[in-house]
Image (cartoon, rainbow, N blue to C red; front, top):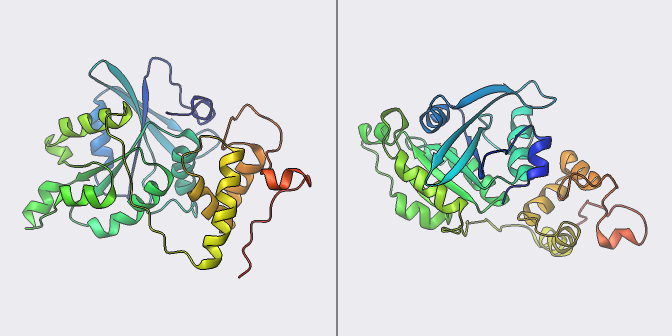
Length: 267
């Protein structure tokens, strides 16, 4: 489920909404078209708190549930090398949306899968929107969405948002993931060196102990080992857990010595 406290700090008001949906994707995948098709006129724009990055937010209903959907900046990755990437990454990581919809271009699928795999490292509550399927057909390209769903471990829904094709299937997939009717088991590459594996074996349990219920401890550990300053700050300030906790958060192994654990790996 979403983290209401974190969402408030990220500027998202969940009043009158049952679920929050993040809409992610590379630029030029038709992500904004999907957003407009799902929300219609029920949307507004602004900036992210403390940022100059624009944000669009909207709403839709499905069944007896009310959904809030946040259109994240178009990015090629979540490695936080730009402000747009940091905003998108922080929303998925800290806000823990009920579903993250990743919009991909069916005509350039290989290029888009980098972001898909990065999102799936953070959350298993995801749906891949295989957009521009009409363009793929026009170029004689065939995508086996069932095989892709099996390989990725999350639902994949073909759409042509400009024509409204596949949108009802997309809404159903979002609803089923949000309500727990569909549980993803995402593919996560594990090609780390022995030194990284050893470090993960020590660090992941400590992160899980410090932040119970965190669904992405392995990804957080990998970013910490990579020296991600933003995540180091989040660990120190307790953002990965309850944002109302003002005290410094330390991992258990370090607490006895009143220090943060070292994050470098020495091979």
